[in-house]
Image (cartoon, rainbow, N blue to C red):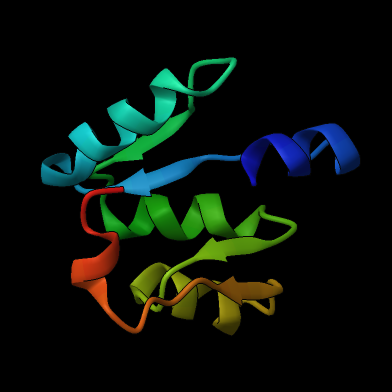
Length: 89
């Protein structure tokens, strides 16, 4: 999705995650054609500032998604009915 947004709309992506989730992002980055910009364990105030400049927010139903919605940033949520089925991805 990040590549699509960059190639089609020239929209860069920043990946938000907690330190304990970073290994998953490292695995995703192995299949990317560029290093993935990250905001790892950022304080809420910094996350809010980052989101306030976004054109779109793509992510799960989380605090940052609600921050984006409150800032009137278009939000697209990705949800999974069965997390066990996608846990290895």
